[in-house]
Image (tube, rainbow, N blue to C red; front, side, top):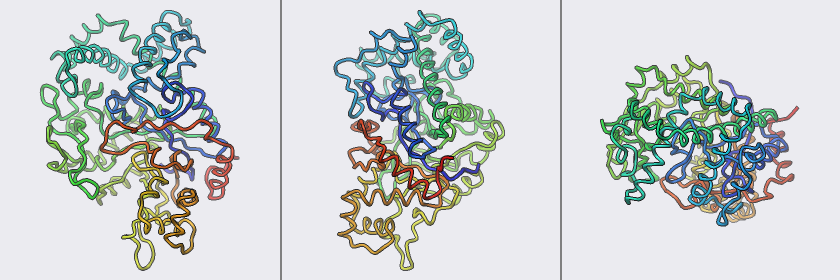
Length: 531
């Protein structure tokens, strides 16, 4: 699908400020959309929006179909009459600004949401009840499995905690009763009969999320702003997706993975990356016409306007690691579904607005799959200034803006990179010099380049280079717009906890001056000129 020349911002909703504990889909989100409009931006990219679990990563969700309850705005629920104002008062330890403390937020907010769900069921209007029933009916294909999984998980997680069981020994395939672990329909029905209130509350919470999400999306679309969402190629082992669809994954009879996902050793890691996600049984999926992937893609196209597929190269070949191995060293490349998957998706859903995350070890086969699919790939400006790739006849690095194919999307950095200023602060003087000479189009000494980096001019110049590039779309992380350093990094790959996923924007950061500057640059280079 052809994309128009445009630009926008990467900013996850959890990063908004001004709400208890974590950013939500409330007032700050609407103010951000207004700011995007004033800055002449027509793209807003987010990370996956599913309910997060251990490690708080949006790329390891309990469901690829559900919404993250922590993003629900409680004030909006009270304003609609769906919650008692006395129930949503934050605990003393919950702050409205500063990094997200996920443990504290979950401890406080999830019980509050269940109270709100009970209040809604007891007090909602006839029309609201009809809307809720319609929501359940329209989303039953994933909602029932998610609610069942969540209800069972809550019970057995609490039981495991009391017994001192933790980690993978607490998961559904290790701790749940055998028939429930196998998602036996009879046993699941028995569970439903004994936990109807709990399951209904879980569904109401998803209704809350859906109402707020689609209201926000409608508001953004009304201002000419498209949402870019994110599909991780793999799903979390501790998820409703795996539990309810075990035949589509490489699992043994007990639901234990046979092989798991990751990437091989490379320049950055001598042992590779061991992600641990269960791998798909692509043969089984093919026999079912890839129906699960069709449903997953359809769901994302409902939630957002453009879909970014993470780790696209895994569809051409994926790194298969024996389960239980401590590192990714002993993995091997196994052919993926290739173009057959995307042909099936297109046959079912038509041409789709998809971006392929084609970073990492990219082969001719991956490039062919990307091009045959018709999806634009990604370019990351931080990868462009390696001194070892500056040839005698000029800079030849494929990540330099003048080298991009038009059908691509440029980022100064992604959620897995340091911020641009953080990267400049840690880069070699030689790399900073190359970046400065490229950004400003003149010879610059290493000392001068470092000074331009230190005062923020170089970060601004590199943002301008990305927006000026030949790529159809340019997306800039909000941290780079604000010229923030490594302290604002969203994620450090292959690590858990700490400050990962916790960054929140400081109040007052979305200034009129920043919007005007961004609007001027975007208009200057033919992006997002509002009529």
